[in-house]
Image (tube, rainbow, N blue to C red; front, side):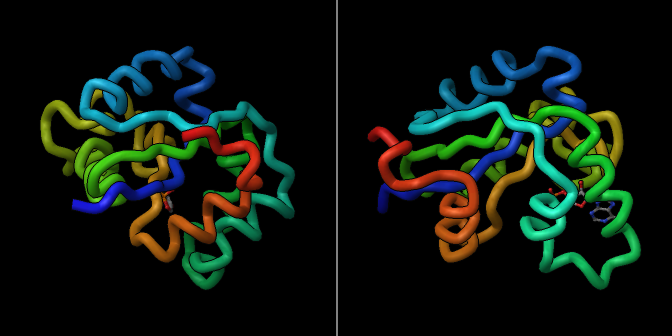
Length: 140
Ligand code: CMP
C-alpha cells in the first residue's frame, strides 16, 4: 500500500483542554508519523478560505467562528493509507455517531467542537497541506 500524507487539524476544543499529546498518541500508536506540526491562531479570512468548500452550508459562519475561537494545531501525518487511516481514527463527524475508541468518540464535545479535522481524499490532502505548510517544513 502507498505511503500517503494527510492534513490534520487539532481544533480549539482540543488545544483548550490540552489534548494535543493524547490525540498525537492515537496517531502514532496507529502507525502515522507527524512530519510537520504548528500551533497557530487562524484569522477569519484564513478559516473562510480553508473551509471555502462549505461556504453554502448553513453551519459555515458558526464553523468559521468556532475555528478562530482559539489556537489550532495543523499537522502533516504520513503513513500507509494515511488519508483513510486518519479518518478511521477520527470517527464520524458527529461524536454521537462515532465508533467507540475513535478520537471523536473519546474527546469531541459536539458536531462543531469535534476535536479534529482530517482531509477526505488524497487530492484534498495535497491542497490542504499546501494551505499550511511549505515543502521545506515537512520532514520525512
Ligand atoms: P470538519 O471535518 O472539520 O469539516 C467541516 C466541519 O464542519 C466538520 O468537521 C464539523 O466540525 C463542522 N460542522 C458543524 N456543523 C456541522 C453539521 N451540521 N454537519 C456537518 N459538519 C458540521
